[in-house]
Image 1 (cartoon, rainbow, N blue to C red):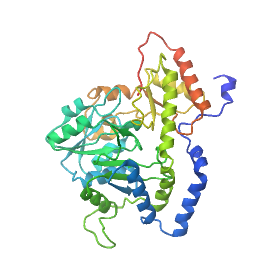
Image 2 (image 1 turned 90 degrees about the vertical axis):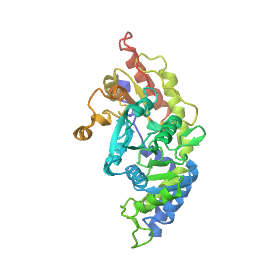
Image 3 (image 1 turned 30 degrees about the vertical axis):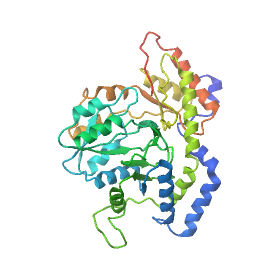
Image 4 (image 1 turned 135 degrees about the vertical axis):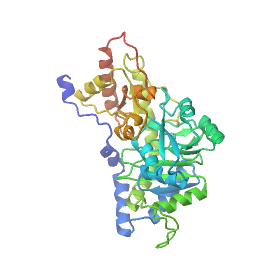
Length: 388
């Protein structure tokens, strides 16, 4: 890093402060409204956000809950998934996807992923399916919508439930349908760094079956249809009013923020084309990817990450250890190294570049310039990696 680069401000991986600066007034007004109302759990603010989010994704119903993990657990419980059941999940996703399965007493079965999209691989699903399989959780990973066509046909053939993990895909579209609007129970996270993020934890479940949605509503609030009446054993997984009010403000900007993310991704992809280290992602049609993350692959991942860090550019790895190889699931008897080769390979090569709506052209140019300078210094005879 030369002296001029050393004087430049760091490029953060995510900048929540920059986002807040653009919506400070409406956010402060929403917070004050909740404070002055004295209603902090459930009530009108949560109901208002549920209806707004429901309309945004094109679902029949939406239920606000306390986190994305809670959304997954409640969706599984509402679907009758519990002890003795097996649930197929992709090996390359955040830990919560499998953790939720374990927390309802079921067993996660890990499937390999597609090397281009990183979505769950149908060939692998067919290989790991057993008579004990009751559900599959496809993950709309990194903001890219999963094509559910083959998965739905497989589920129909074997009588399986699909529960969608959309914790990274707020606003993504596939075949004209927004993620969350398929009718299946679909789980969202509103963790602060998400495309639609609260200022704390939060989540939602959308769906089209009123009976299943009613079960989710009951389960999130101690199984209570009204105070001191409890029709089932539930838990406390409610979305609080403050977060709901904040999310209502942010939801009005989500489509614009997603469009900016797509623009940033296109800039990265075009500028990195032909690089010896990074090949641009296969960009799907507009709307199918909302770029919660911009993930590239390179055989020199660790060296590239160090290089970028030295130049003040923050990056991430999503995810460095496939779920079946985590300590937790190795202790529970998950298959060992070599069993899911694609997930294991990409875990060593993937790197997430800075991605948020407020990235400036100057910041994007800095990232591109730094990556290209690194690429120019690697062995050109080495095989290129790919990106998604």
